Image 1 (spheres, rainbow, N blue to C red):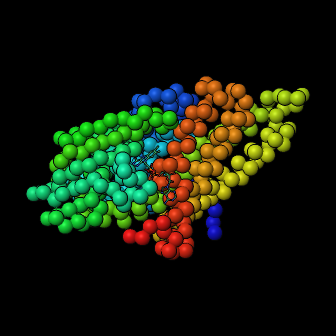
Image 2: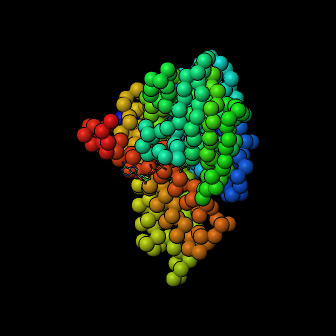
Image 3: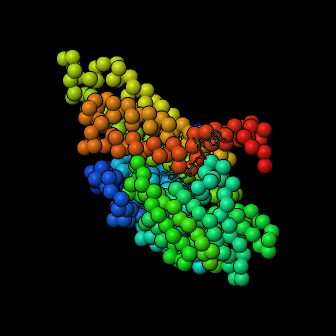
Length: 386
Ligand SMILES: Cc1cc2nc3c(=O)[nH]c(=O)nc-3n(C[C@H](O)[C@H](O)[C@H](O)COP(=O)(O)OP(=O)(O)OC[C@H]3O[C@@H](n4cnc5c(N)ncnc54)[C@H](O)[C@@H]3O)c2cc1C
């Protein structure tokens, strides 16, 4: 095993770290309390090539597709601004799907502006009646003439307010026959679409929304991959978004730990700096250890993906363990700041609200455990029989 980084990975990490710590970090708290998406910051990230890392050779600034590099970029961004980092992940997934499965028209229309940070494509899988059990989705695409008619509702769609298009998953029918779940890139200006926002406890700059499709006409070349293939393609993508999401929690938690280590050096109680008390130093040591373990799980999954080694279990392990360890670390750092930690002028309460969301998005802890058990011990360990 080699835990070292390549020259390209080191250079990318340094470039992202410089931008993130010097220019992005100071604005995190102010931005996080607003619902405006910081396009200007997103474009600075795009200028480093980060949004194109998984978008194929025309947009990847590196010579080869490198998921570890994507992880390093996301973790560095999250150290500075959890939300700026998180907004990168759907871009990586959508650009990878469009590049791999999009028609010529879709690739020409969406890839360049998406990776330049000039537009946004959201992703709609979750519905009011189905989340963890994603296969129970009810949105329908019925083949009609030259394309499809789409009807149904998606909810919990990250960045919906700011997006120009979204990849929508739908049960697909042709002449009455059910063909399985397909994915379509749908222009959000199309007639028959209505949207609303979900007021949330964190992630405000990105926001989530509900979108309703009322017989929306979708052209045939909007199909992302063959009819009925969406689950294979999308679930395959979750195997890299899960460790990336976990790394946003880990990056953010690491920033909390570093700031807390500074704080407890100078804050005095009982005639000594807090750092001298084991009740203070041990939680920092413990969180430093669990975060390092979680980080290694993430990079192990991303390294396997780059090498083409099966990594579904490792991705699920990283997504269960990483966000949980991150939330716990952020909460303890808040507590170690005493009453200051609870105040809105410090970043801890905001970070806690932001980071908790990665315990849910892309599948909860329970669902990751279902995946791990199935991967390691077989289908008898699934909670359902289909
Ligand atoms: C911030 C955020 C951003 C999101 N962004 C997107 C997005 O862009 N696009 C999108 O499509 N979705 C998005 N989601 C939705 C997310 O993927 C779902 O919320 C998640 O998969 C869980 O589904 P659910 O909320 O319907 O919960 P449910 O499926 O209703 O589950 C509720 C609870 O029951 C538990 N549970 C369910 N089944 C089992 C089981 N078999 N065994 C044990 N426990 C179980 C779950 O773990 C959970 O605790 C986002 C969610 C959040 C919070």
